[in-house]
Length: 171
Image (cartoon, rainbow, N blue to C red):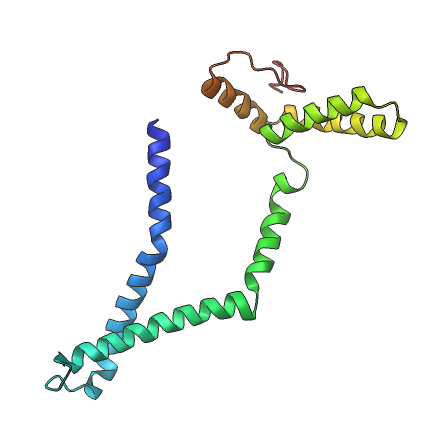
């Protein structure tokens, strides 16, 4: 329970990071730029009852926000750099290439077993044998061991039954 609460709060901090970063960017760049441009804004002049100093600071802040959003737009829409980034993430993620996570493996094992029992076709039997070997290998991986521990913890079942996962998968 404590672990989940800490992780939820950590996630919330990450979600607010974008807004906090934007505020820091605007504040920092505005205050760094202000000494170079303050001579253009007469502090004794008011527009709508607001000193020109505040108008100057606000205009610099809005310009910084505009620049950050424009860079984001160029990155996303014009250059489409995020697409290449997502492709690299997919290529390097073993769970999108050859590894199976526990829940997907459980469904695949059930489907494979049903297909094996219902078909007399030799090609399908070869395919189901391959899937059996894949599931057997996956059953030896550390993620599947954690999945079994998670099922035991969450479901309260001391001995959950999953095909291709055996008690001696400690090697």
